[in-house]
Image 1 (cartoon, rainbow, N blue to C red):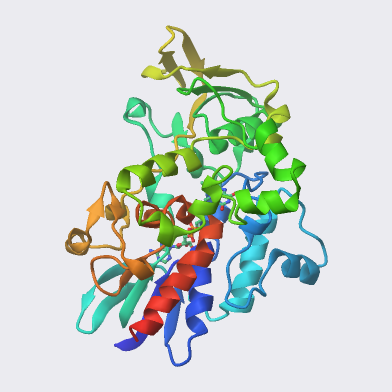
Image 2 (cartoon, rainbow, N blue to C red):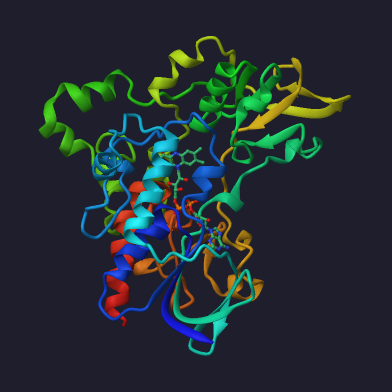
Length: 394
Ligand SMILES: Cc1cc2nc3c(=O)[nH]c(=O)nc-3n(C[C@H](O)[C@H](O)[C@H](O)COP(=O)(O)OP(=O)(O)OC[C@H]3O[C@@H](n4cnc5c(N)ncnc54)[C@H](O)[C@@H]3O)c2cc1C
């Protein structure tokens, strides 16, 4: 059995960032597995734009060299803002080829405790040993399908993450459920692709990012004031943004304060550039689904306001709920040894779980290190904190 010091599982922004940082440590044997940018390539809709701003869309690397600017200049065409999904995916591939050329694209099928750390089984049956494992496997398995929709087959009700091409709904009537970016942007894309879309959301008000107050704070009061109020990581409103950018400080606050701040920082909201694109899409707020049934090849949906819709499809923009037990490469005995709160692992410095040597990065780290971990910009902190910890415990 081949052995190494660290296995990184996942090749999205977090796995790639972790790998470039760890590979920079002299004498450390690092292996990285996963398909580069696969979630962005397969589980987000064609035509999407990134909601995060320019600085928050850079994938972290230890030399700050693998930037969007550098990618744009090498590829011969500048990247526009907001950053289009396809350009971000290309940037991720470019980053991988430059920073992690030895990426192994095989899947990891099992991670279990081994004689000297962990035993990792790959999809083709090969087994290797590693002293540490860094899981950066993303949110794919956590897509949330509310129970109300159990009565509909997947052909009639599906999660937004199940679609790459919303063009398949051209000419169809689609009810989009949710009031956040994913639901709203899907509705805009459906409409632009020739579908008849309607949005329903429980919220009484859609929160649009960059409202007039936020625009004044961002642009009207000058660069200096902006930099005091907003961190480059771009998570959270004025002031809170600065705190979110400092996970080590945030985690020292009482739990109840952390939870409140987290809710405020990442409440469901839509990017302002969606407002015009949704002008001709009906949006029904303060409304939830109370009953669903099939009606021949269609779905019949009864809403809390007493009205009914018969549609070709229900698209669930209902977000994600972290539960690390859903990572299929974790055997139940390993998950049980990981101290958890509500599905999230409770992490220690270096994003280490209660199982020594097992680290979890990305959205599952949000309970311990705050909502920054749900975004690309959080990979700077995560990769650096992880690397410091690995060096200190080499
Ligand atoms: C619709 C949508 C829009 C978003 N827009 C933004 C945005 O604008 N800005 C932003 O910052 N964030 C955005 N996010 C959040 C975004 O998903 C995360 O910021 C980012 O993907 C986190 O990166 P990650 O590396 O943790 O996970 P991912 O990018 O999901 O990468 C997971 C990696 O793990 C690999 N993997 C999984 N299982 C295995 C296995 N068993 N073996 C080997 N490899 C495995 C996958 O192949 C992949 O390479 C958005 C999310 C959604 C759903």
